[in-house]
Image 1 (cartoon, rainbow, N blue to C red):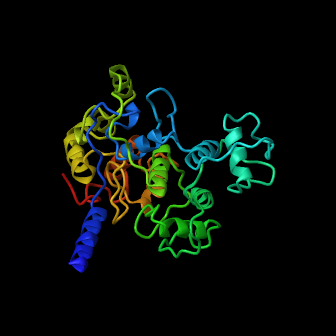
Image 2: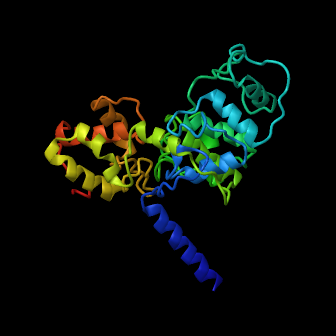
Image 3: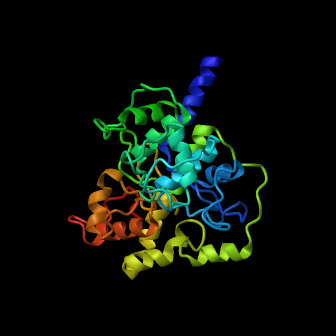
Length: 320
């Protein structure tokens, strides 16, 4: 019986990892209006309940914003309850709102800065750098092997393996970690929630109606599922192709901008493959944008249909 239970559990894990990750339905509940219904909502809410984050503004978390080194210092200091020492170890942190937390990380041996005298608090944190921060902050077991083919020789390779071996990361797809990609605030919430085994609380506040309306006015989606992205799709696809594009999106991601197939790594609204993203996003005029950015993801899809050599709809298994 115990062996059968183990195999059933492994089967469930395999099936879950093979499916695109989907978001829930917005329900008007939670500490932040801009993650209501997001795949990362539980992780963000768990961090909020643990007093690790208060968001970027009232009722807002700014989930798509890249995490800076200074912000990461604040997250980690709260997450592992570091003491705030006196003094200043870096010449470029005096004016940072996170100077105290940066000093806490330095005193705990979690950071040595970006140079011997500087911390570079405003620079975005890469996935590789985050691995080293987390391994040191959480005192994770070292020397774990990894299966990522894109980190060999990376200065953070050991930490990336340790992070994977501890179950805190699965990479950006089966055999890649995407070490140079920036970490967004919502992605960091996922890393920390898994690392600290945090769960969202049973009760959360009701989001004020005006904040729900405010977030809706910021852009998309205008509703659940792929249909909520119609106005954005209309900006990039020919009128006669809009419905087809929406059907493909519905099939690929169900309209979830953060969807990621854990088996293939395909990501975003149109489930682009990360290994092609850098080239294709640059070709479409969105060089450097995240694969999870909905505007970039839709625009690159349209570029692939109309302008990519050998373009058309054959890029997707779901062809509408």
